[in-house]
Length: 278
Image 1 (cartoon, rainbow, N blue to C red):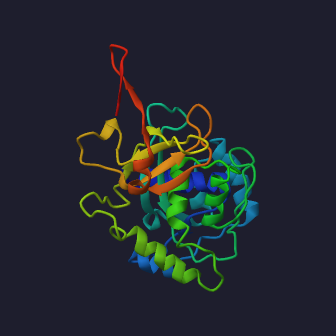
Image 2: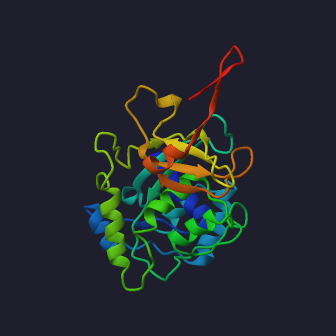
Image 3: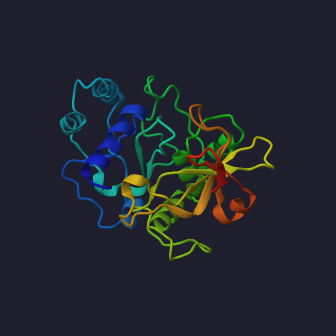
């Protein structure tokens, strides 16, 4: 579930869609530890005059991303990507096939590292804190899909964007993604972030919720990985205000123990036509 091809895809797509280049100078040494990377690493800088045309050529398959990066003296910073869950689309949805999340350390603060919209998949680039994006999704002002909402919700308490505190925030993220269960989380069901595979499962609605939102549990890794020992997140659950084929609305992350007692079980249809609750 992890490897050079996955990491290269993450770096390439990030560059193509946002202009952020997760690379380091060719010949430079990779930091010996993730903690060191979070503390000292900076992004490889390429001028907009070079990166702008390259993004278009990469998007149109006119040049291989790796070839262009090598031509400007850089190499992909695969080693400093830290796997942060992998998501598989549940059978009811056809909007995505698979999604992997990674975080990467950088010493950038106010500098946007040349980030901009590609005007195709990304129409506008806007910078805000993780907490701000989560709140806007809750209010229905923007659309965040469950994997995006999940990761941003976990990072929001750690990445507040406080001036002069960036190094401490980076260390906090490093400790979190490399650490174990949070207080209250069962060690027996905890899966490391690098190994966590989540295939959301809709289990019912919240009858007392004005919008009758649907609850999705996150512990299942999907039928493809059944019996492999892989698992997702048994500690949290997602509530979503709309289900496919429409986009998700009013998405929120909750502790599973808090939300499950409120769920109205989803009826299960038998071959005979009768129903039973899951």
